[in-house]
Each structure stands twice: as structure tokens, then as C-alpha cells.
Amino acid sequence: MDEHAALLAALRLQLDWGADEALEAAPLGLAAPRPVRPPPEVLPATPRLAASAQPRPVPPAATEASALAAGAASLDALREAMAGFTGSNLRETATQLVFADGIPGSPIMAIGEAPGADEDRQGKPFVGASGQLLDRMLASIGLSRADNIYITNILPWRPPGNRTPTDAEMQLFLPFVRRHIALARPRLLVLLGGTAAKALLGGREGITRMRGEWHQVILEDGQVIPALATLHPAYLLRSPLSKKDAWHDWLMLSRRRDEG
Ligand code: URA
Image (cartoon, rainbow, N blue to C red; front, side):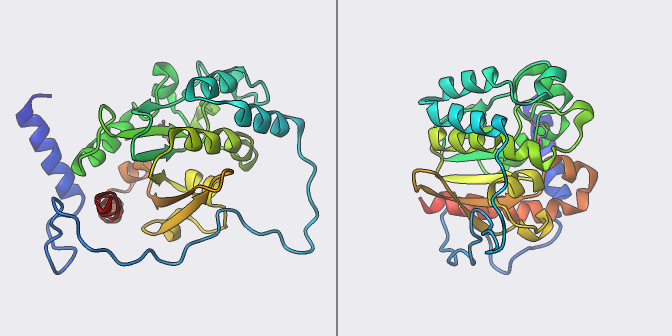
């Protein structure tokens, strides 16, 4: 795309985002950090068990996933451990493991749901139509895979027919995702869509209620990482009117990043 076409595409995105009206009374001043309100009430990272709840037996594959994840001392080791993990039959139907893209160690890490057909073919997250929208949204707040964002998914293997991951699949891969976050050490997380929000934040609320608020992910080593839930780019492609809400969320992320 030449520069002119890229500028037009960026303008189209602003229009898609509802930039025909002011969202806030005062100019946002994206270049300069603004004072922000303290984060709203934070949800617990994992739901508490009811006193009467009985512990469920842990399937052997889950024990293996936790042990492999905990034993990975680097991102390369984690990728290898995931590639060698045989506890999920998703690997039988997928072409290849989709681990991550972007710059490890970036201040922001984005987490989506699972690879689709394009990602499965290319071995990288978010390279299809929703990935192109994601890239434009990232660019609008100064983020790019080449410089300052790291991207992964809850599932590293494409579910057949692009179906939504089951709860059991999300739980199975969660130790790998949590270890991935610990090793990538982002300052902020952005959770793209309901699957990522549900897997990492727990709770029963849908993404439309969880989005637009800061939550927390508490890792095994005690690290607390602020996490913003937002709408999945694939959903935005189907529901363009929701781009206004997404724009609000990305601005929240941009402000928090600029707070330093
Ligand atoms: N949707 C996702 O959640 N992740 C991808 O990598 C691609 C599409």
C-alpha cells in the first residue's frame, strides 16, 4: 500500500470508529499523557470456589501442561514445550503451532483467541482479515509488531472449522499462556475478545460487560499485570458499529501506556 492509500485507510478507520462526533468534552491530546482516574474496581483473577464446591479431579493432560509450562525458562523453551505437548488433539487437525508475533519484552502484550485458517497456514497470530484490522487499530495508537507490541493467543492450535474453543481447551492451555506472559514480561495486557477475557480473568460476565475496564492478572510469581478487555477484531468486522466502543478501549490503553 502506498503512503496515500495508507492515509486513506487510516481515515476510513477513523470514520468506522465513529469519528464524526466528539467522544469527550475536552480534546484527548494523544501526544501528551493525561491524568487518569484511578482504575475501577478490579475483578479477582480467578473465581473463588464456593465453600461447598468439591475439588475436581485434574486430568493427566492438565498436569502435564502445568509441569511443561513451569519448566520452561525462556520463550524458546516454552515454544518447544508447547510443540511437544501431546495432551490436546487439536494438534492433529492443525497444520502448525502458532506461538506469537511481535517483539517479546514489549510493554504491551495482546492476547487473542485461537489461530484461524490464515494463521494456521502462516504460523503467526492475527495475519488474516481480523489481523489487518488489529494492525490498523494498533497503528492508530502508535503500536506495531515491528516495534512495540507482542501478540499471542489462548490456543496455539487452530480449532477445526474455526469453532470457538471449549472451556476445557482454554483451561488446558492456560498454564502455557500464563507462563508466556511471565516470560514476556509486559507492563500491560490487552485481552482481545471474550475467550481471552474469560480464560485469564475468570468470571461469568460476557465481553460486552468486561470491556472498557481495567482488570488484573496475577501470575504465579505474584506479579500483578493490569489487563484491559476489549472487543475482538473479528467481531468488529461483523459489527462495525461497535468500533466506537473499541476506539474508547484503545484510547484507555494508550493513556495508561503513556502514564509510564
Ligand atoms: N483470531 C484470533 O483470536 N487469533 C488469531 O490469531 C486470528 C484470529
